[in-house]
Length: 153
Image 1 (cartoon, helix red, strand yellow):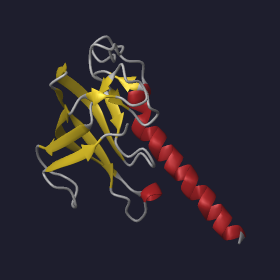
Image 2 (tube, helix red, strand yellow):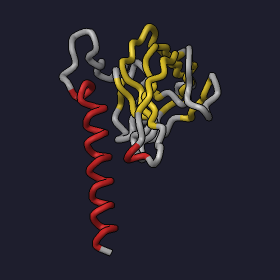
Image 3 (tube, helix red, strand yellow):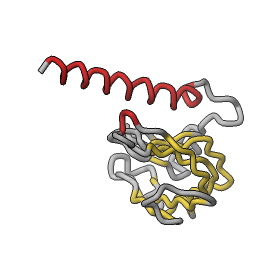
Image 4 (cartoon, one colour):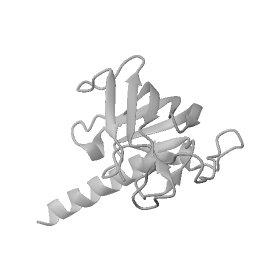
């Protein structure tokens, strides 16, 4: 019993350290070139895991439950009611042999947001309802070249 408690504590600590190591760069204060824009009702928003409104974020978590898939280094070329487009890197944990001991791999992607509709929580804001990632090179084993994700409300 005591051994399993120690193993669990070690696994949780390893996962926390891995997450901290992977997010150190994104935790740095944004520069003028990467600072997110404050949301206004005139432009659509990207809703994050904490239901915050984001406009042109440089970082975005796709897997809210465990953080094992995230977008970083996002550079937006378009943002408006007809959609948004950017390039970035999808950091995906291979979870081998298990997620806390897994390795994150970087995959370059083109990011597209679409389907701007009123946000249920704040109807005076439109939010994007769909995200597609197009892998421009290698991609995770089980992923298609284009992955579509419905975005939360």
